[in-house]
Length: 454
Image (cartoon, rainbow, N blue to C red; front, side, top):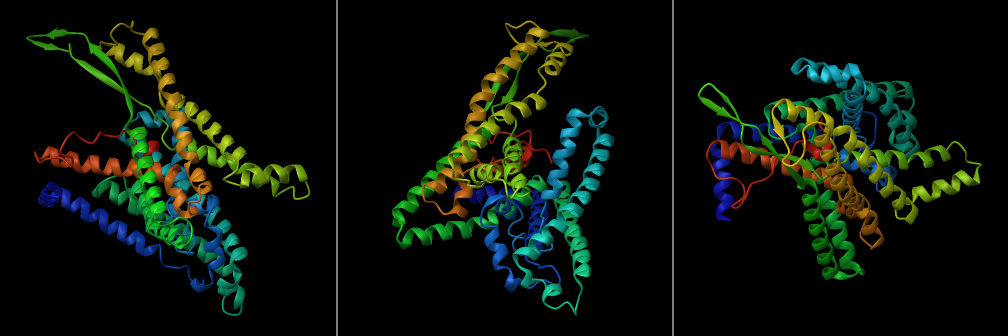
């Protein structure tokens, strides 16, 4: 406890770090305040059906990422998700389209252009998703919309137009808050906003599980066992996120003038989970295709049967297919993100080599073989983490609390917390203070939010 108090005092002594933390907290408070501001023309007391709809499924995930703003018909109803979708699209284009690859290699000017493209695409995504959100709101809670109950006060067209503009502006404002955190705060702004939205639902989920267990389904002992299992899952996810395979690289000695360069051994850290949360995101998108297609064929018994298997998140075939897709996408995304040929060429140009391996093609094959071997256990464990919420739900855990037993939410929480703590520790060590941990250091992370560079 004394060590913790001393560390907090050291953090507050560093004026620059104190300013960054203050800016971050102010931006987070503004975001949480805005998440409770309801759209003009919506009665917040009549949103019971919308809240029930977001208790599970894809809408439950969206509501969790938006910090409950989706189910409250808030001005931040879409949260930061349109910006994330746009960022993922631009990131994939940077890997596949030559023009975007060229921009990525141009340095700061290229990154600014990519950021502009991302912002423009975010606006388009919002303009496409906001009307869909309003249609769903009208179908689930028609009594909450004043334009429906009192058309003499405001027309539906006016309500739709103003709401689309407000929701789009709200998402852009949240994006701006994330950028301010990124520039003047601590940690990755977008990832922190997502994490805050996830954490906002955690106390309610834990309380609901505690109340249900104290009722007639196991008592306090079962609740404590669930908390212990949850902590073990978090520890396992930390190992997955931080796990690396270090490949030794030796650099040849060279003498320039009176100085000697090279001759030192370094390491290439290959992450066990290079893909991060991307395979889960892609797999979730694929899993909702059968149910979406079945809506267009209500008379087809075959499509309805297939859809019924993929709507039930606790069914065997749903989880088996989900896990299989995650493994496939993990290999796919890792193959895109890691280029062994480029790594081998860079080492050869800088006079580096892996001991016992010939430079060039042999080095590229060696790195590719190592990546294939470490990606297999990483993909299997990632698939297990992804289906953990379903397993917890089958085991009797409340559905809201079961979402925190794994999946995208837990991976993002762990990744963002580790990255933020690592940045704070770096600031402390740079000014010759003790780090956050008494023994060892928090390992740095190359991609914030478990694999997605926002």
